[in-house]
Length: 118
Image (cartoon, rainbow, N blue to C red; front, side, top):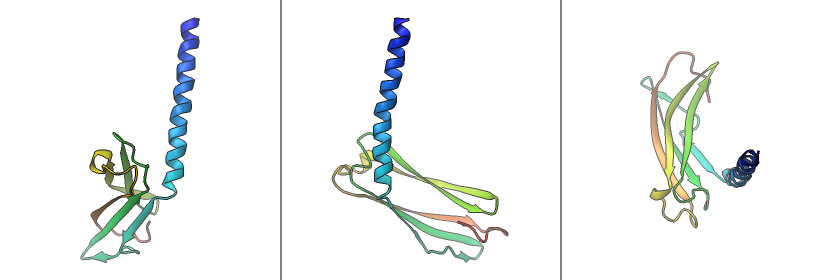
């Protein structure tokens, strides 16, 4: 019985501490600056090409962590996943005091029915 109480206490404690980190991350995510160029997206030669840039606020990327931005194009009742953009803390050594910037180019084939989409 005692080990069950100890396990329960550890479980609740870890949930509380992870919740604090999650709340901080959610608060900082409101300061996240995402841009897509061109906006709106354009089709050229059957391809849709765009650049997505992101700026993370200071302290959003703790040491040893990875922040992943998943990019999805939604159209109709379908969606297409594009490669994720990862911010690895070791690539941004001053992330606790300065913003972390990264951009990535994307290209996908246009298909009928993809317009309109987001």
